[in-house]
Length: 331
Ligand code: ADP
Ligand code: TRP
Image: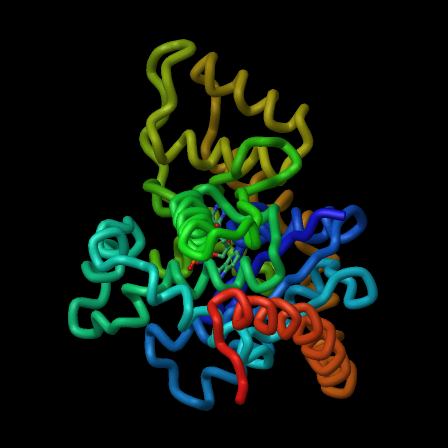
């Protein structure tokens, strides 16, 4: 059976982009593949969280994974820092990753722009740690959103380079994957680009947002003065709202508003109201489960402990074999 690995950085609450871009696929995949889903807390250190925030953010993502339907009896759910073998593989892979290729990564360049006062080496080697996350379980399939494609390409590069260097075929090639063959990009509410935590509070709708908050955010989403020609192309902010509707609403609702737009009869107030209600309905079961699971500390402790044991079984086997391939021997 093929192995799937994916993770999300523990930097706060999950939003609809994380859910539709990644976690929804996790839930589908756990029935068909050998799945490892983790909370990327080593990765979160690149932004220097305080000790108090670190733990509460890990808990938040764990709770939301479970609320979204990841089942610890089907998939291995674990916290990255519970598996120190990942850090060891990261060290080995770092020896074969070159400054030039790391500096050229789009996400590194974005981070340098976003946090010019904290350009730490962890940011530079982020794609190496991500490769270690994936290669530690010799995964071939990685459910992620479109923005992660370049990282996956780098993971293949590092795995292949290791294979070439040590004349082995040890690591398989991992590819970004979801069931529709097309990676999803969920737009934000600010009229430009994708939904993301770092694009400001008002841009993202979180899984844990109460209905009233969702209504407020959607009603304030960027739009324009409306179409003035039949069948005109939709400008980005409007296209984004339609894309969101395509994700959360039934097809006939989408078609209804699309034809109103095309005949210049659309009223954005009604359109946004409908979009907000459909978001609320689609997220309601998850929102309820978040509250239940968050208060069950015993269950969370059990899930994390059980996940760490299973993940370390697989990771320690890889590390044993990698050490042998590299040539470490004990006296
Ligand atoms: P953020 O961009 O909010 O910081 P992360 O970078 O932690 O989110 O992303 C975690 C996962 O969610 C990744 O697999 C990423 O591809 C996916 N993801 C994040 N935002 C979106 C989006 N707007 N559309 C689709 N997938 C997304
Ligand atoms: N880089 C991913 C993101 O920003 C998170 C991540 C870290 C990841 N390690 C991974 C995703 C391994 C898939 C596999 O969203």
